[in-house]
Length: 104
Image (cartoon, rainbow, N blue to C red):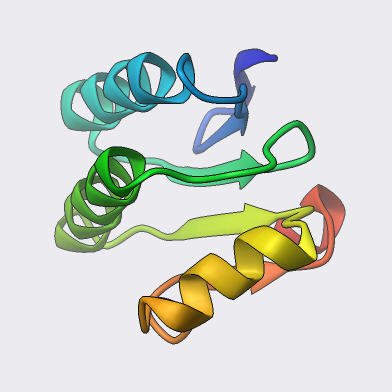
């Protein structure tokens, strides 16, 4: 769990489970807003469910990243969580890859 500066232009986030996910996403959004020059890779290894509140925060982070010309990539997303993205129609909105090394 945590936020790491993977390199000068990549932030790696090991996303925690709810209810802590929202705070972590707020922190990352602030970092992206302040830096404006980085891609974000979010590792969902510890996540088993995503709430509507967290989906909203993920969408805001995606928009902020796109507005800065950078990417938001999800990795290690469990089948149940992928199902949530599919049901909400967000599977085509977010870039989802197998693991963090593919994301980088």
